[in-house]
Length: 130
Image (cartoon, rainbow, N blue to C red; front, side):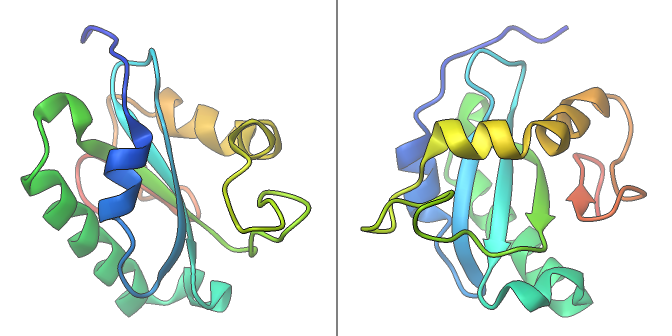
């Protein structure tokens, strides 16, 4: 297994803000690799193939400039918006603990699929392509 590491998600997330990406929460602190939960703007684009390709290209662009330990290896595009008072504060900052709690099953799937592509799971895209 790959060594676990500590990530600085704010640096990575700041580079991931590209259309149609509305919100990104990078997860993986003390895990073997980083993953991202992504909400598109508008969220209805979650099942749109062009939007999914655009997201994968944006992640590849961010990864190209990152240290290998800071690269996003897999991601999930979530179908529902993140709202103030729930996943977001009133000033639209991420509530990371709430996001982790609410989307723990999706996060677990991102890591349970370590040795296989996640393209067969709805909304998940893995290390081996969409």
